[in-house]
Image (tube, chains in turn blue, brown):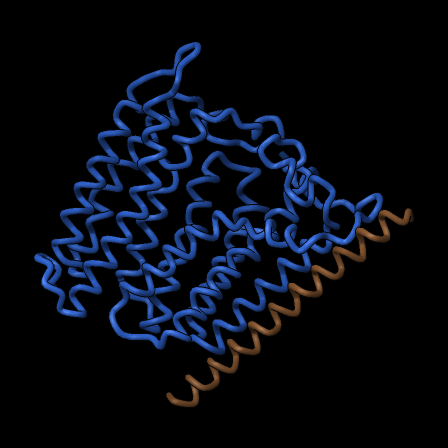
Amino acid sequence: MTEATSTPTPQAARPLPADWRDFYALTKPRVMSLVIFTGLCGLLAAPGSIHPVIGFTAIFCIAIGAGGAAALNQWWEADLDAGMKRTAQRPLPDGRMAREDARNFGILISAASVGIMGVAVGWLAAAILAVSIVYYAVIYTIWLKPRTPQNIVIGGGAGAFPPMIGWIAVTGDVTLMPILLFAIIFMWTPPHFWALALFVQSDYAKVGIPMMPVVKGEASTRKQILIYSVLLVPLAASPWFVGGAGAFYGIIALALSLAFLALSVPVATRRAVEGDTMKPEKRLFAFSILYLFALFAVLVVDRVADYQGWPIPGVNL
Amino acid sequence: MTPEEETEIRRRQKSRNLVVGGVLFFFVILFYAITIVRMGD
């Protein structure tokens, strides 16, 4: 994949003015829901308090920042999206929107998210939000995705910023805990995505994106899923080890991570055969989503229970 | 441009204008609330 193939080209004929629903679709609302959840968890788990209006503004800025980055991603990858069944119906490849409209919309809401975050919440949170947008839209989308099969590993960083930003919105500084929350999502992304990549026939190879199962093969991908799952076990429990969360969180995090590991072992030790139903891969993928939601929800319960003095055993630091 | 296209463009412009109006109203409320909170700091 060369840069030339993904460089935006002028439209031959300008389509009809886009419907507002197309702008909404450009923000990848389903991805945004995970971003909102993890950002909110970071905000709620952080020590200290934040006014509800400022907290709402922080989450709103994280959400529209992610939406802006998603719009810029689709602006840049419109040609690639047109060549893949899964993405061909998006507003740009489907011809429902002019390309420059998507770019301008992406820039506008990205800039608005950073500006509002800076003015209303704090400039450190705004700076990290800006880094996360540039990381996804430029470093991941434009630079690394078409060049390396490690794109998912690196791209995982983009999804790992929201809890860190939510945390910093409350505390105003970068400490070990938000870095650990970042690292947990970073380490979770490769096994989550590669489990999906093993059972979904994607068109990435057709458009020249070097995804791991295509470039390094299925066996290598399965082995790497296991490696990341092993690393996730101590990492997920590390907030407990460093004294950032209680035993309540630590023990549940260990149990969830060991279940994740147990589900990744059959994925790593098998090979798909003709007509394979790919049950272990589907099971791991489904559990990985539940895992992340549960892990962050438990962290919030652990921290809020400690701050509020709720009688839950193991939450006190 | 056909009359059908003309009608569709007008319909889209109208719905977009309504959404933009709603978004601007939301921002008015949001900035008002932020200002009140910040003044209390």
